[in-house]
Length: 113
Ligand SMILES: [Zn+2]
Image (cartoon, rainbow, N blue to C red; front, top):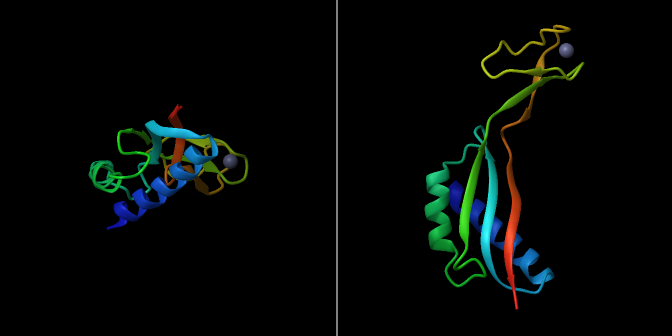
């Protein structure tokens, strides 16, 4: 499943970060997930519960923040509201997705010995 491979990659990334900072454990993991990323946050949470056993995230809390999609004009950068026609009201050029399809590790709370 898609969510399991995301969680595997996340745990590897967190492990690298935790080691680099000499942490003994991870207390909290904050993720930002775009609504267009194609990720079910409930599935992601259950995948995290299973996959974290035996890792530095064994007792970590997972926080997931949903990010609303945002479109911008590719020419002049004007931001378009969700639900608008995907054409710039200022110059008429086509819009592109500026955010909303990303998965970002926003922050970590680490326990250091
Ligand atoms: Zn424009």
